[in-house]
Structure formats: structure tokens, C-alpha cells
Image (tube, rainbow, N blue to C red; front, side, top):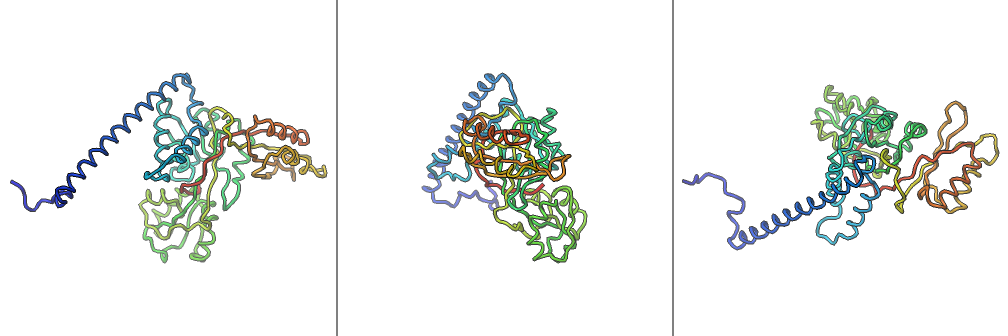
Amino acid sequence: MNDPGATKPAWADEPAGEAAALVRLREQIDAIDRAILAELNRRAALVEQVGRLKAGRRDLVFRAARERDLVEALLRENAGPFPSAALPAVYREILSAMRSLEARLRVAYLGPPGTSSHVAAREAFGAQVELVPVSTLADVIGAVERGQADHALLPIENTSEGVVTQALDALLECEVPLAGERWLRISYQLISRSGRREDVRRVASHPQALAQCRGWLDRNLGGVERLETSSTATAAELAAREPEVAAIVNPFLAEESGLASVASAIEDRRDNTTRFLVLGGAAPPPSGNDLTMLAYTVRKAESGALHRLLEPFSRHGVNLTSIQARPLKGAPWEYVFFLDLEGHRSEARVREAVEDAGRVANSFRVLGSFPRAREARSEGSAR
């Protein structure tokens, strides 16, 4: 006997014709889903064949240019109504699953979990990898050098705070290939146990996060003490323990923490973005849209030395996208100049410009050539 008080299904009050039409449409959708699954498995079988041809070489599993170009081609060809904005995320996980058929990659990042490096690693490699948190920038590179990880994400610069100087210094000692880059849009939330701004007596976060929210803090919490922590995750743990502490974290960490939101989107720049280098694997071949990183030293006593260093790039038509200077260890008031240029080291014009500049430099090193990222679309945090 039917219970008159039981809840009716949602379709029970629909007109008979409309309900029948919905059933037919859902049956078609189910059939398409089964067809998608069949095609995914057909693609997976081909990937397994590719893996066998690679003879188990883990260094060839991740190819940044191949994955970038695939997504760009799909975006160009998408006629809708499936939203183009969703395609990169969908294919991130498809490609991650396909890669796992060749090898389950290990990816090192600057931890602990919840940092920008964690978010960037998930967005670059998807869910089907083993993420390995490490405690220092040197360990990010060291994990790949020691074979503890296949790849690593190294934060290199931020649109608000500039270059990550420790990362540049670490690159000078790095023998790991540069495999690609990743851009991560940075947004911040202020969280605490109560979620009330009037309860906040201290604001805790990583120094980069505090700096990227300095203006908002000055305007809204000007008299409140600011406490630097080793990571945004550590700040969240402190806020969970102490009711007078609020932490600046990314939206992912804010949701995971279980704390209440005091304010959202508190970063000073709407275009606040961090650039990461992807390390490890085989040195990438030319992709047609590459960057090359170099490091040069010049003799400071020579007049016009920096001008002579840079002139060959202009003469050969090579565009420099970045010039950064870092103190040279063991040589006070002398500097290493880090250059980013458009093009691959194997291209004739790039090779000639690099070699001509090397002839007037005191020393130089090509750090690597790698495919450029698509663009910044995601949200994360500082460390």
C-alpha cells in the first residue's frame, strides 16, 4: 500500500507528454555518456601502445607542448554549446588519467598542502599523480635531482612582488631540464574562527601573501599586528587554534580549513598572478612557441659591458621578455643577469645571439628552453 505522506518524485507533477520527452532526452544523454566512455577507453588503448613504444621512459610521459597545443586546438574548434572555459579542466583530468597508464608520476612542490605550489601542481598535472610536498625551494629542485620526483613546480615570479630571488639563485645550481611553465591566478581570503572582523587582533600568513594584501590590510586592519608564518597552511592552523588570529589563505585552503570567512578577494591587484617553472623529464624539443632562460656574468670594470651583452639579441631579432639581476656569490657588487627570451635554443637566430653575447660575457649558461604556458586562468595562493 502506498504511503500518502511519502515524497513524490520530481517528475510526478509534470504533464505526461513533457515527462515522456524528458525520459527520451535522458536516454539519449545516457547513450552519449556510454559512447564517451567507449571513446575514452579507445584513446586509453592507444596511449598504452604509445607507452610501450617509449619503452617505459618516465621522462617522456609529460609533454607540456603537446598538452598545451591539444587544448588550444580544441578551444579553437569548439562550436558550443559546451562552454570553452570548461574544456581545459576537463582535459586536464583526461590527460592526467592517460599519463597514469604510462606511469604514475611523482611531482614535488613547495608545501605543505594548500599552498599555491600545491594548487599549481594539481592544475598542471591533474589528480592522477603523486604530489610530494617539500619544505624549501632548494628541495623542490633536489627532489628531482635525487630521483624522489619526476617533476617539480618552482615559483619564479609574481605580478605584485616580482621575482622569487631564492628560486633564481637555486636555478644557477640546477642540473634538471626545464620542461614548461604554469601561470596561477592568485586570490586571497581572510579567515578566522568567528568570521567577525572586530575579533581580529593578529593577521597571519606567508610573507608573500601579506605583501600582496598590504593595501587592503592598511585600509581595513591598519592597527592589527601582522605575523609572518612559514606558509599559508601554517597560518590557517594558527587561526584554528587562536580565536583572535585571522589567516590569509587561498580559496581552496579556506574551504578545507572549516574556518569562517572574514573577507574575500583581499589581494591588492586583480591581476595578481604567480608564474611557475615545471622542472624534470627530458629537455623539450622546439614547439614553435618557446622561451629560453640564460644566465650571464659581465666584468663590472668594463665600461658598456651590459650594453655589449644585450646588443646581439637586438641585432639577431631575438626579443628579450625579462632581465633580472642577482648578486654573484663570492664577488661583492658583481651580478648574475638572468635573461628570458622568445624562441628555442636550437633556432639559428637564438643560437647565434646567445653565442655572440657569450663572447663578450665573463661567463654564461643556458638554463633551458621550454614551451610557453597558455595563459593564467586559475586561482591559488602564495606559498
